[in-house]
Length: 286
Image (spheres, rainbow, N blue to C red):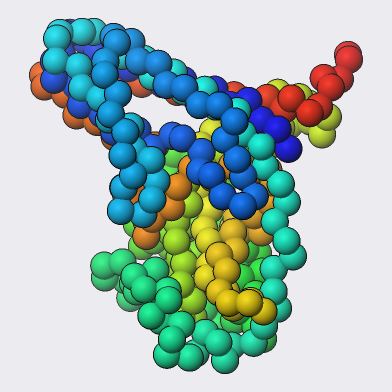
């Protein structure tokens, strides 16, 4: 698939602010099933953009605006080509249970902080356990949406798995964090993925308003070694060419799309939109 993506974020402040420092993780990744043909970021007020790769290999774009301002816009545009990943391997648990697997998975197999002491987690681990690691991953993307409702406004950006368990509902970020916990309980290395998802309301649309999205990748054994397989528990599916990856980490806080601070006591109003357009689809006529 060929996508043109525009991610526009605007902040309006109640009074002038200064020393507005921001870090963006918005550039789609380059990998075997995804290539970036064009990418540009425009900031208003204008600022010098500095780029580097973070610990996990995601590009970070940083900028600061020192002079007083009451408005900030961040306009991100990209053209990306994706292809369907190969069929994931169906191999048994022996490779995951081998000592060398933990060394390869590294920190992605370790828990992130204290885990909630909740009987529901043990139940979910049992329900998602399959005959193979891949079968477990496939079961997990059904078990989570079966048990939890997708509903915005119940949780917030800092919510934990315990909050999801208590509310019985959440959004893609919450589903991804629960998937990470369950996969790691199974001894499978797993990482949080931030990106975009092509999800038009109609099947033949060429353009759609979407939101930033979250899913996971699991480290599974393959015929020629270990491979990362994407899985989207919000949409009951493994990753495919509709998923545009930005980056990954151990949890959301490793790959927030935009993170910033400013000097001043003024409140701010945020608006954000993501529009994806397919250049390989002819728009339907009414």
